[in-house]
Length: 176
Image 1 (tube, rainbow, N blue to C red):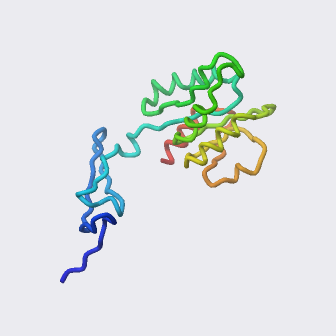
Image 2 (cartoon, helix red, strand yellow):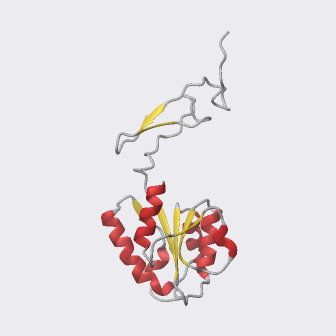
Image 3 (cartoon, rainbow, N blue to C red):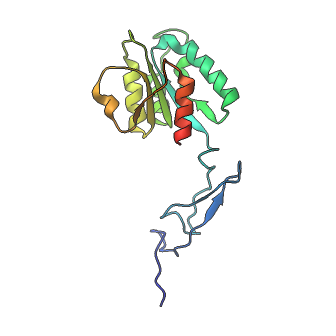
């Protein structure tokens, strides 16, 4: 009798590990324990270097045009990065704000980049950051906002000198 390590909690399948290959770059990765049964394979996903990254940005709403510039630059330079913050396209502060949508966007992002300038008084950014953390996202903070929430294990203070969202994103992608 051979010892068998169950790998699928659903059907007690055999302990076979399947290697998946990324369609984009050819990198391979093994499915984790619990996802190795040939009867219950999850759809193969691109490797971390090829998978898209949903980025939400949080700051004072007056900085929307700046974030639009970063979104456009990242679309060219880092095509796998998707900025999912619809608020940056709103015309003016408080006009046509769709908070349920903003919270859903923040909660479903992979990374939230938060920009706090010295004299900024955040309001909505705190809500967006909380939603992102509740969704399991990492948060990169540029600047020094008030509060002890910055000690959360998913919050990283950028070591970039000044307020450079581009370098904060590159730092995140390098850690991934």
